[in-house]
Length: 273
Figure 1: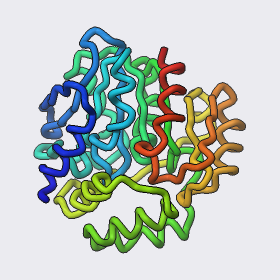
Figure 2 (figure 1 turned 30 degrees about the vertical axis):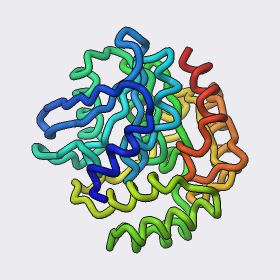
Figure 3 (figure 1 turned 135 degrees about the vertical axis):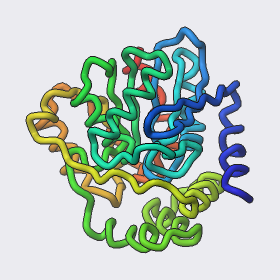
């Protein structure tokens, strides 16, 4: 199966009408999958590295009952966005890109929800442009409050240095520790790993003072191999006293978001409403 066919197959499982939007700016073309009432409060979903926007198939349709949901393919990753213009090289560049996306969608303020690398983009954007962010939700955020565990980085390196479907699948199965990953999610992630894309912008962790200025809803994957869940929880509650922390006892980093919608969606709906 081709990457585009796998992308469409997972997108078809949203089971709601999806409007595919193309936005053009100095960085190139950004692809957005939108659903829900056109006049609903906007929610912008940012996926983790290599995941692409269809991975929200268990979350987006539920949020779309009350919100206008925009799932974005990152300009610095595989997907249907294409960095054909200026290359984003810094966090500020990514923030400029996301501002352009919001402007292109006609959104003044939105709820942002990100997973993993998408969480880092959402969090740092909320710090840099707080007047554009109405609510902030983070799914097992990485390089935000803590760095990645060394064993996780070492295990991920082969799939990053020499990406392939087999290496991607092996890494995801290792991290999810026997949880029943959806075959189509694995298929799309593996094909995405083999797609040419602009290198992602290296993360820069916010300062403690910056983290104290935000009060997100944070889902912590208790079984995550990417970072220590107890330390992550402690850092969030210490540095962001107004934050809401929701532990997900059966989740690992890469079993999110698709496997835990029953726990994640009600909390998001309550928070965004």
